Amino acid sequence: GRSQAERMGYNMKTGIVMKIHDDRATVMRNDCTFLTIPAGTDWKVGETVPIKRKGIRMKVIVSIAACFFLCLSIVGMVDKLYYEQVTLISVDVNPSIEIGINRYDKVISVKSYNKEGQQLLDEIDMKNKSRVEAIKNLTEHKSFQSYVKKSKVVGVAVETKDEKQQNDVLNDFKDIGKSLPKRSAPKILSYSVDEENVKEAHSRNMTPSKYMILLDLKKEKPDLDIDAVTDENIGELYN
Image (cartoon, rainbow, N blue to C red):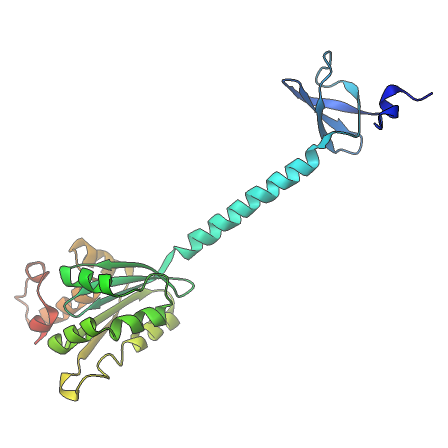
């Protein structure tokens, strides 16, 4: 007749005990799959023991866990790529601000370098917008236009290894004064900068665009002390 285990619906087979923890054992079956089953009181690691089909397949558990951690890794990688800055844009009128752009052409950070810059950023929503939309929101905003009209000089600097994006950004600023009367149209000073320029500007607590403008002015005015005019309005300095 059938054994009690068979009458209960179990299929008796054997496996090798790989690990015992508390009252549970991890057993490798003949087909190299793993089960976690209740451990016998006298079982030892390495011995062959009877096993029943009604166990939790360790192989399935491991696969599910692996998929879970893979998904976490992918999410983490995508998150890291999203918040990795590939382009830095700095803009100076009197407000001094910086805009960080990721590889997906989205704004991931904004920073002000003076009180006017912070006020401007408080009024304009740019975070997570596309670069084109963010710059449009900035350049068409009434407060920005007011500063442009007063200063008549706009400095723009771009630091990136993406030449196309660099050209696109500089083009975005070409029509800043389009809505202003011709006599109020600003002079656009555009610069392509490298990491060293950015580092040098930041060490002086200013944007790269302002730093490049001051370097240009120093060529015309050799006695100009760049560190002494860090907080000066570029419109007044340039004009």
